[in-house]
Image 1 (cartoon, rainbow, N blue to C red):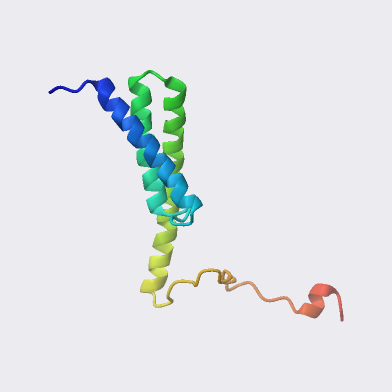
Image 2 (cartoon, rainbow, N blue to C red):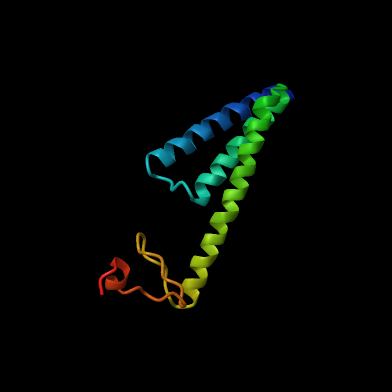
Length: 122
């Protein structure tokens, strides 16, 4: 039994389309965070499969679009990776992770402004 490139591309195209729809559903329903590695990995895999299918069928605009989506995914994955490394350093330093929704810590050199001075009351 032999498979043609066209048949493989068609199957990968359908799997890529289903994966893309699954990623969108999972983010929209709150099951994946929009800035999670799982979401970006699923999206990049879907775009890779769709790009291959577009290459096999010579659908150049769609192929370029999917390659651009992959590039965005790589960039966002890198940013998520950096954020995870910062969290890991905090945990290893004993500070623990910052609770969700907690305000960012002020830099050490920033001094609080007294309320009276901020509103112009002396």
